[in-house]
Image 1 (cartoon, rainbow, N blue to C red):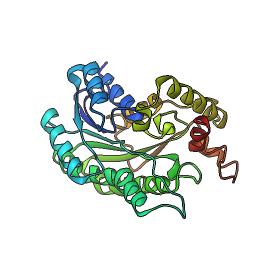
Image 2 (cartoon, helix red, strand yellow):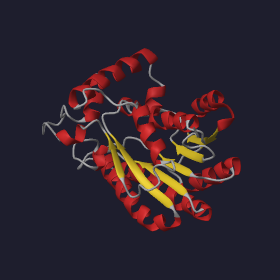
Image 3 (cartoon, rainbow, N blue to C red):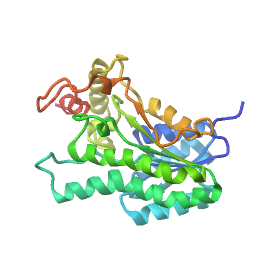
Image 4 (cartoon, rainbow, N blue to C red):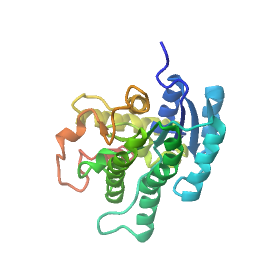
Length: 283
C-alpha cells in the first residue's frame, strides 16, 4: 500500500516544536520530504538528524516577508518542487481590549496573520506551475468563539480563517486547495508561554505544568481527554494528501467538542478559557 504523501515535498513553518514538529514527523512517516522552518537551530538539527535524508532545516523568522521568500526558494531548491505548505508558525500576542500597544498589534499581525498571508502569496505561483498544491493554515478555536484565547491573538486567527476561505476560492481553479485547522484543548508549549519560553524551563517543571493543563482540558472537553499535537498532525496530513484534495476553503476544528460547550463564566479568569488553564497551572 502506497504511503499517503509519497513523492510529495512539504514545508512546515514553526516546525521545531509542538504541532509543527509532530506534523513534520507525520509527513515523513507518510512518505513526504519535509523542509522544516523555525528559529531554533538546535531543535531543527535534532529533527533532521532523527529523520535522515527526508528532511532539511531552514532557520528563519517568518514574521518577515523577505524571510518567507528566501525560505520558499531554499525549500524548492532542496526538494525540486513544493506540494504542501503548512503555515503553522505563530505565538501568543499580549494585550487586552484596552491595554494593547502598537508594538503588540504589529507583532500579532506580522507573526500570526502576516506569515500566513505571505506564505500563501509566494507559494501559490510555485503550485500554480505544478497544477497541484495543498496549503493548510493553523488557525485556532480562538477565531470561532470568544474567551478562547487572547484579544489580538484571536483577532489575528480570525483573519487566518477568513484568508483561508478567500484564498481557496481564488486558487481552487489551479487545483490548489487552501484549508485551515483550528486546534483547541490540545496540550502544546503554547500553554507555557510559547516554544521559546518552554525551551528555557526546567524539564520537570514543564512536564508538571503540561500535566496540569492536560487535566484541566480533559475536564472541559466532552471526550474527557486533552488533545495532542499528533491529533492535529493526523488531520493536517489528510488535508495535504490526494485523499483530502476535494476539501477546500474548510476550517477543520480539532478540539474534542470543547467549543460546542461555549463559555461557562464571565469572570476575568474564566475556568473554561484554555489559556487561563495554562496560567493557573504555572502558579
